[in-house]
Length: 340
Image 1 (cartoon, rainbow, N blue to C red):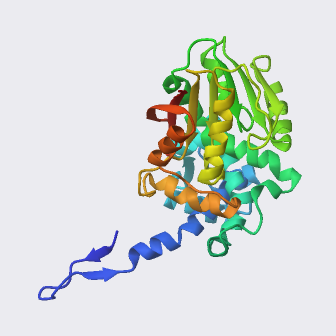
Image 2 (cartoon, one colour):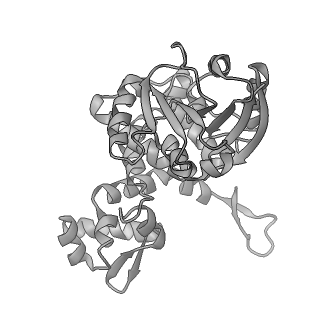
């Protein structure tokens, strides 16, 4: 959108200004201010109640000057409120950044700060080369839990909606392919106490998933199996297959191959759920999905976003019958199909 203002009386046309360019280009400052405030515990500290700068400095251990810098930045972008000399969390910060509710987005901010922000500095290089300098699979071991927790936080809202739109029969047996820490399967198991699920993951993530599941009430009904859907034999005996946050890792050719491999172990009528950042045919809407294409480009050799139309074409080519496309939460949606 181009920013204009009315020219003085008698001028021939509106004057174009660079305001929008500045707004967009300074976005990195907004992001880093947010990451820093979260890491330094500003929102968590204000979860204890409103306070002035001296009180906030005492709660966080920050110097008073830099406490003022971070909270004023958060006021400016609308995540904190200021009344007189006291600061407090805005409703959205209280809900998602204070740690006081289950809908905690701080792990996602940490993921973006520690893993994404550094490699986004090389976005032009990744786009120019056609691949990142290093894939996210090559991260140091200590970053794997940060990655897993961040992805789980990013998809939490979509996970909560999935059982309502999936249309799975009661007591389904679900193979959750590339299921991360198991958050998608846990959501399904929470909605149906008779549902059983197996998370199929690569070894490093599978270890994190097993540790996570031990702390949940679903450890007996959601288990973890190590495997790579691209090359390993898939287990049989499932009547539903969930592929969430995986399509954007691969090329269309690899995705078609994965769908064929799943179809080979699926009985006719088995349900398939493809949850991802599906876009419109132009790959520009929804906006967050279009931006996430850059996230995938800096992390993955073949990362990309795909349209619903592309996804449904793959289904047709690989033995699946398209049923529906349903929204989840935010920019995520799910394509529902069944084995033809």
